[in-house]
Amino acid sequence: MEFIDQKLLDYCQDFSSDENKLLKELYRQTNLKINQPRMLSGLIQGRFLSLLSKLKKPNYILEIGTYTGYSAICLSEGLTNNGKLITIDPNEETNYFAKQFFKSSPYDTKIELIQGLSQEIIPTLNYMFDLVFIDADKQNYNLYFDLIIDKVNPGGLIIADNVLWSGKVLDKDHDIQTQYIHQFNIKINSDKRVENLLLPIRDGLMLIQKL
Image (cartoon, rainbow, N blue to C red; front, side, top):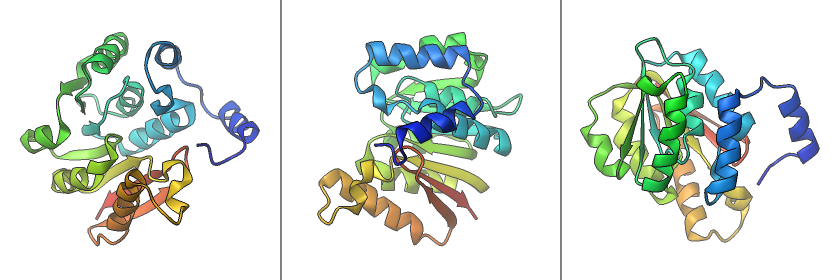
């Protein structure tokens, strides 16, 4: 669900920095070959993630949920020279797809894709992260936050996607997926270890800075 008129969104895209040719082709191929292409970040969200990463200049980024790799490439644009992005996803098909585009990007040596369950892999990671992007199974958002908060440097940024869930968070009766999202939003808003801002970009982005 887009929260602004499509014509206005098109105007925003027209007056935003463009995505590069590789991202355009990734977007195209995802829509041609992969199920649920609406899961892709797309230009506005992708440029937003890229800009945040460039402002943050992270040494280490963690992405929970790779899909076809669009957001990973965008986030990698801000890595330091010796920086690294770790992205985790259990889906063998989309992981294979993403790897082909990683290989064609300038960030291939900086991106490590780990196939598996994030809740099992995150505890094994011996890194302190400057930026984390959560965009995976919604029922585990609370768990993912709990697993990564102590692995984020003070001042580090956590970004959670889909926190408006197509506007369903406003429904009086929440279905189970919306309940997961709403409970996550409540949890973050009451956590004294962080400062947060929920933005209506695409399906909602929760920006969380560790204090």
